[in-house]
Image 1 (cartoon, rainbow, N blue to C red):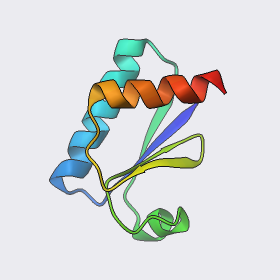
Image 2: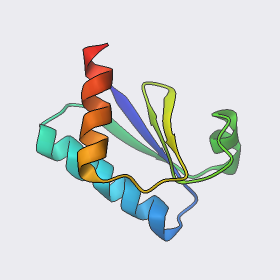
Image 3: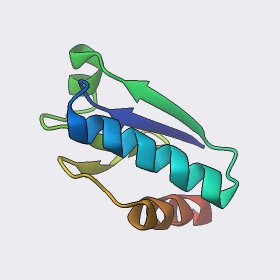
Image 4: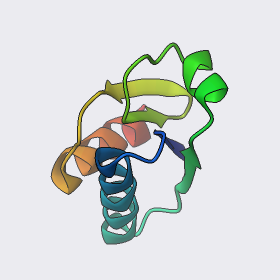
Amino acid sequence: MIIKVLGTGCKNCLLLEKNVREAVEKMKSSAEVIKISSIDEIVDFGVMMVPALVINEEVVSVGKLLTIEKITELIKEKEER
């Protein structure tokens, strides 16, 4: 599983990345977390507002700072597919 945090470095972007890493660690998941800050790459996902979260190349959240619990929920949904 590959999880991408899309963000330009704003406060919420940094907090989302932190929450994603904590969620992955708590779940003892082997997911790879990648931070994407390039505007061109962010736009390639069709995202116009950050922070955004992408799991296995599917955008699952845009413009929100998600809690660790919500991130865990999203990861579990994707693992079940």
